[in-house]
Image (cartoon, rainbow, N blue to C red; front, side, top):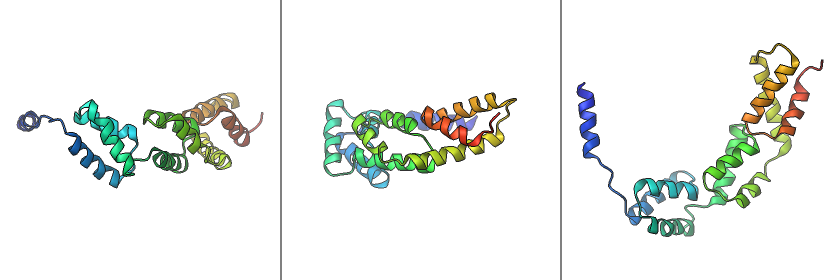
Length: 171
């Protein structure tokens, strides 16, 4: 009971004061120096900080000019991480990049660098692992579950069918 009172008091005394454009620029420079950020991330952060809408574009332009933010560099790193480490397919990666405010041209250019054979191998491995833990009464049901799993990972329908054909027994 006492903890909630303290929490309520500290929350009430710490009301958010909007940041100025200079403060936002300094904060974003620190954030971008530690981790790659997209222009959409920067705009979202500034909106949350209460930076006036008229000043956001100027702050973003300075960050881009000083190379703290580069959407192409961000997209390349994101695609590399999500395809190699997380095992996502191109569709899921493209959707997430669009959510982060990356342009369609940059998305298509960076996704073109992904090796299709490597993705197929990665998908096949993931489907094999999933197949071991999936309960299905027949081959048709198993293939359907694996297909839905592959679609959830963001892979193309044809690539999923190719991988499923490699790993499932024929009836």
